[in-house]
Amino acid sequence: VQLQASGGGLVQPGGSLRLSCAASGFTSDDYVIGWFRQAPGKERGGVSSIRRSDGYKVYADSVRGRFTISRDNAKTMVFLQMNSLKPEDTAVYYCAAKKVLSVHLLQYDYDYWGQGTQVTVSS
Image 1 (cartoon, rainbow, N blue to C red):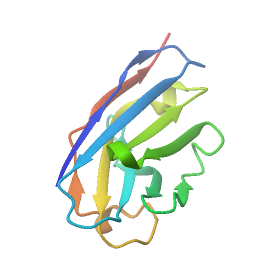
Image 2 (cartoon, one colour):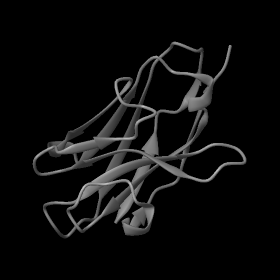
Image 3 (cartoon, rainbow, N blue to C red):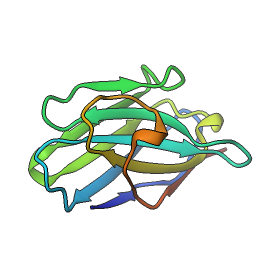
Image 4 (spheres, rainbow, N blue to C red):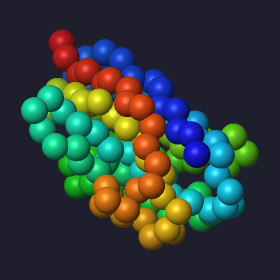
């Protein structure tokens, strides 16, 4: 399984970015993709997660209402639309996948990880 995250960059507070995660190599038709982030000096934490088959999703409290996760099953991609960005959203963002189909943001349960993409929110 390979996961490729992209779309990071520098944005001003209040701005928007759209992250993409391209997934390949799955032997099962269904899986869960999650977004996680790690800010400098902090532990990595969950942002949002979505199940491929039915689109069931969850969000961390810190991003609910500002971020939207979605999927394009035909292209096996997952997106994270980030609006109303704040400086505290600055972090390296990772996408990860798991085979067990429960949707949550517990990192230990994720089997595969992609490389990160840097998001910097600053004026």
